[in-house]
Length: 74
Image 1 (cartoon, one colour):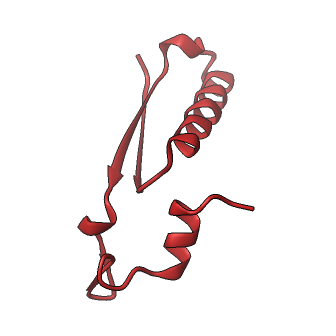
Image 2 (image 1 turned 90 degrees about the vertical axis):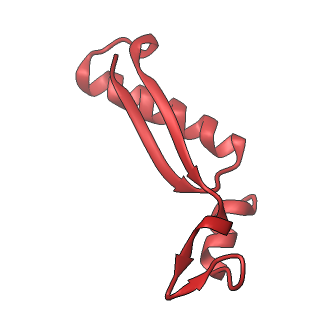
């Protein structure tokens, strides 16, 4: 049973579904392992548990992360 672990800041359910589908398809194509034998696990990090440049994201969230991870793209 191959397992793919994705570690990321908060992702929406829609983003997780797309990532799971794409990673599973690609892994299966490259390794010839059937898709039903490939597992994808998400290890998410809440913004309240992350910091950059010495500042917690909940205090001063980087604009690029908020736009990328929490807002739907247009």
